[in-house]
Length: 259
Image (tube, rainbow, N blue to C red; front, side):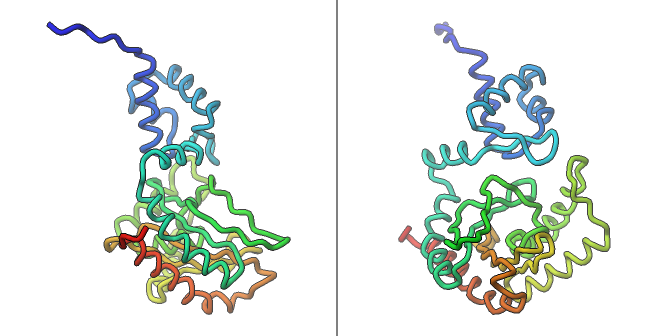
């Protein structure tokens, strides 16, 4: 009989919690406790420790928690991920697009709960700026960069994205009429190859975004944010082709051996 190895049970539980947190990105404490098989009271202590360490933060909605960019960056620095490859591929096209339009240029990706967040950004050097928050998550339908992804998902995922908005903790409750209007906008985005936001959700901010594909699936979007006092709604379609071109360049680079 082999010698029994002594372990630290609390540490093993902490590792299970950390694994769940990383895999899910956003979660409720009840979901976490149920998944790892630890009482909520003990899970709360582990979660408080992760919050104090800067690895987890409280989400925008009550009862939700999210992984912080700090933890994500630590993992990405140790283990190369697809996002790391995407960031490398996007760097030069983003720079050229920023020089061309002189506004914020960002890369957004979809999370498992059908929200988006930024993984790369170049911020315009104007006195009056839009300051994008990399830690903020947005429902897909609300933004140009989200719509650019949503428009090119399959119908099953589009339906699930709308279902995700009807969670009890989600303040975004849409009517059937509003969903129909979003679907119409998605159809237009598919036809022209990019999505726009004319200031529907932030009246001072417009945006144009194009999807980024990898192996036949949409994986991200590139977006330019446009303050309404520097640009007009008519500019959006004019900029659309330029943003689409930047997305195509990223797609070429991400499949090459150069990065």
